[in-house]
Image (cartoon, rainbow, N blue to C red; front, side):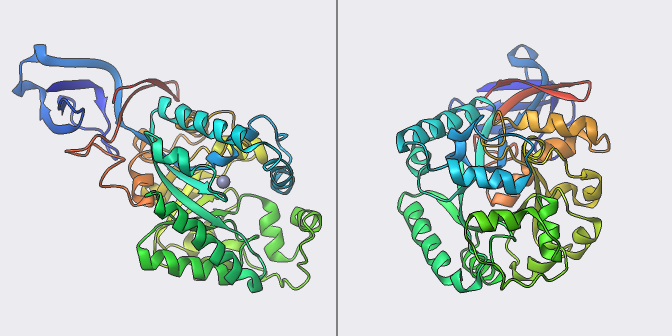
Amino acid sequence: MHFLKADKLFNGSHFLTENSVLVLNEQRQLVDIILENTIDPGKVEKLKGIITPGFINAHCHTELSHLKNKIPQKTGLPGFGKQIILQRFASHKQEIIEHIKEADKEMWQNGIVAVGDICNTPDSFEIKTESKLFYHSFIELLGLNPERANDAFNMGVLLFEQLKNMELAGSLAPHAPYSTSNELISKISAFNLQRNLPSSIHNQESEDETKFFNGVKNGFDDLFAFLQVEISWFKAPKTSSLNYYAAALSDQQTLLIHNTYTSKEDIEFVKNKNLYWCFCPNANLYIENKLPDLNLFATQKNKLCVGTDSLASNLQLDLISELNVLMPKFPDLKLEDLLSAITSNPAQALGIGAKFGGFILGKNAGLNLIDVNAAQFKFIKKIN
Ligand SMILES: [Zn+2]
């Protein structure tokens, strides 16, 4: 048995009473949490800092890892999307695979134990079967034209079956409201609902998205022209995008990614939906140079998640670095709120709360040692 304590113990949702001690067995599973005065103090290893459960990266695209430092910064989302399309398939498969492997290793070293990972291809599947991390792969589908809904859906199901055959966890997910029809979102929602699986969608990442749904000239017009996608049939609903597609979502939990341009009215409009708000601040700065206003989400504290997004729009896959962007800008967020956004909340969102995101008896959900000073966290080491 190994007895472990620190200045503070954060269990995924709150700090434990000061004299709590974690008890680990030889297999490094957590078997008990006891009070310090019930055992010989000489047996307890005392660490300086805060012990937390292993971190959960709610949003990543490991298959874009080879695009690190290749896409210009602060061009806005349509320009960024165009570069991704131009560059993502320009590399050899082996190079793509090598970079996914490195990304997997980097996340593990940074204390991450589970990931919600977007997939448009099977490139990452093999690595996931050998990884120390748990992955929930979101098979991402696109198709703005409702006539394409069946074809896009069927292609997604094929990739999903490939994933299942490799005994990997996953589900289907629409890419974004400006690239996925409500018909396709409904089909995806029904598929996931039937299997009790979570979903994900990029939501209100740019002002161009809001303009697109309001019928105002916007950057996606150029992107669609470049892609030779004919959209003259599209009739702007003149509402926010979230307002437009929310009805196509089922009651299954869904991660909304980015939310940079989400308004108070949007949050109110979807308050009865089973939604998690995932923020990727470093990617927002990289692409749009604008952060979402987390003060708007004050009523949603147990629904906040944080992700790294991909190395195409970030210089590292490190959740502590993401929290360190948010902490000084949003002082109303408590330490517990920030740490829950990389532990218990994403565990609930991904449906893996029985294994990850907390101090879970009988499991090894990972343990990290961090510290906090002057509105910045510091990652000290991975304990477990
Ligand atoms: Zn993304």
